[in-house]
Length: 369
Image (cartoon, rainbow, N blue to C red; front, top):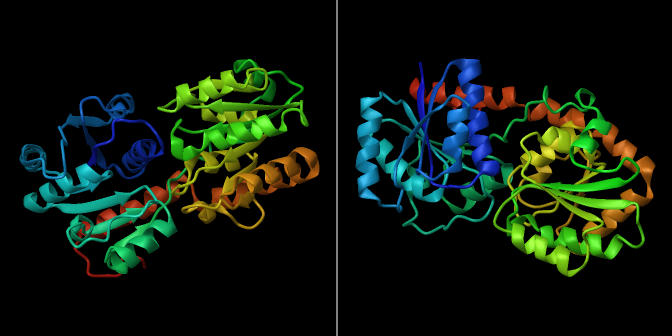
């Protein structure tokens, strides 16, 4: 049995943490991999991991060179016969990577974000990894170009979505609308994400402010929670937008939210391969997404509106869909197939398991073959 410890410094709950749990469960269920989550005691991922039946252990991860955590992690690895350490954030990558090397086990670095990594020679921890997994092609390409990563030791494996759960016909739209207290005769434009500045809810709200008089039948809904929540609420209140902008809070059942809305918007200024957009496409939603990070990995030319990160262009794309119900229907029809064929949970699990087995078998083959 392969035993893997995932290290995570982050104490939040967003796409990165969801990916770690989803990946762990897929590998456990499909291949019998034993997974432990190593995190800080206040991390939300700890609760989610325990609920999912995964093992959890706590470390301080106070900094990149937290010697106490490194020593404790080395001891834990040896006592529990861990085979692979997979790190996910900056601080735990240093602590976990050094601990893995000291303990003599394989070290995998998963890079979720698409922002640049310092190219300084002092930032060598990624080069020490036995393998690097990114969640998008653009992240992989940047690390090869800027961070001296061997192309044979890095692979983009986007987060896989459960296509059996995100299936439009499983849900009744009227019931979903009722669940969220929404009327039946409106057009709903939705965002689904952690409420972080990078997700650009400010642009979403400005567009709502610009268009609501011209399209009184359109309502804007926001699902999620996070550090920007109060700022968003203040903007809505200060601009008297309560009648046409609704905040629904964090949603566990995102499929029901997506079923309720008509148009999905993912307008971040930086992304890997966004899980929420994959979910929306599997639910056959007419979608608009900004061409940032690795978002284009999901685009087949006809399955959603891919637009430059530009407020005017984003607004124009939305207005076009509000004016043209036929185009919305075409996008809905084309939305699901490409994601289902390329970005499911089983595809993700198979690729990661191949990396695990190749590393542990110490094959000197090409990992990308």
